[in-house]
Amino acid sequence: MDTGAVCEVCVDSVASARAAEEGGAARVELCSALFEGGLTPSLGLLRQVKKAVKLDVFVMVRPRGGDFCYTDAELDVMKDDIEIFKAEGVAGVVFGILKPDGSVDVERTGELVRLARPLQVTFHRAFDMAKDHLQAVEDIISLGVERILTSGGESTCLEGLDVLASLVQKAGDRVTIVPGGGITERNIQRILRGCQAKEFHVSGRTTQDSQMVYRNGSCFMGGVLRPPEFAVSVVNPDRVRSFLDRAS
Image 1 (cartoon, rainbow, N blue to C red):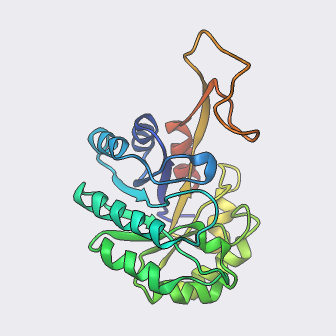
Image 2 (image 1 turned 60 degrees about the vertical axis):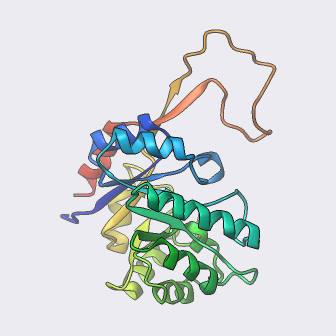
């Protein structure tokens, strides 16, 4: 199978961005707080990543975890972040807004799209929380967005494969459907064959042991559901290469 599929890697550090580039990724999606599904990264992180790699950098614009229905104050934060990232010369931004009824908030998302131009725009996995995915595709297409990142409304792309296939068919060349969520080296061929997507989104991460020698096991920095304190998750370039090998 020769898909010529484009690989986007989700990163939250300079080290992961470098690893994604080494592995052959076409671009990175820069986030913070991946444990919460990805939030807006710091300006300092963005600047250092841009210095470290030559890849296109798409930046997450998500002011908090939780749902995708934002207050006016949160929308203003997103607008400010987009203007800042434009000034930094990023290639694209990633965001999405829903209404309380589960439909795409076309008006507010449109404000952000217009503000972001001429940057590329990806509507992120807020899409998966929409009530009607086929209607959501049409709403997003009406905004001129370049990409939709989605798992087909399920926890993983494999579970949402039938929906992904219908989305790719419905979208045609009007918007690029980018499968993302639960893609592994074992299932990537099945997913790309099953939905005929031309791009895909992965984390490609492995866990490294912390450099800390002294370890206080009585204190934790997060809540009950938390990643381990003395392990560091970072992109593995060999995994990125493996994804690309299996996608071609």
